[in-house]
Image 1 (cartoon, rainbow, N blue to C red):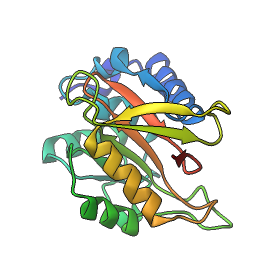
Image 2 (image 1 turned 135 degrees about the vertical axis):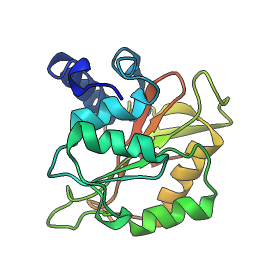
Image 3 (image 1 turned 90 degrees about the horizontal axis):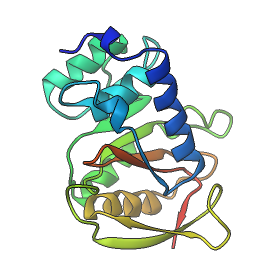
Image 4 (image 1 turned 180 degrees about the vertical axis):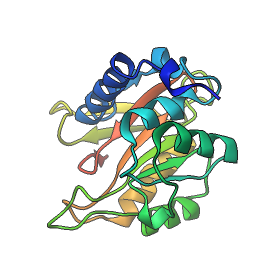
Length: 197
């Protein structure tokens, strides 16, 4: 287990936070967290954002191996909670059936009209990059996207999440943000206002 202090808690956390904000401000734009993920052994793509965002006051849900879930808890002090209670949801399984993604989205915090910020932020194993080849091309529109739209390439797993979120039909300002982690330690974020064409 990496010591928390091996990750540059000032510069590294600030840079990961900046990259996440930039990704959310520019939906569909692919950005890399590789230099920061690489500071952790094995599961850095999960640990660098977790150490950046989580603390004792934020609950997280982790669906993967026990060791990584415990490492997130140890490094951040954040409690592991149920899917329904989680502020941050980490989905490590690369591919889920569409029905499974629908169940995730039906159970998580989606915020309320008075408090839309009380919703879950998803971090999902996307699979493209150096690994699984993109299988679907979609166009995006919405805030942070040029007027002509933005075309992106998604793996089948990422596309399933997008379809499930569209079907869920969150009423704005409620909803969830999706951040896909790719095999090359790049990320792609989609905000609750991102529309798929």
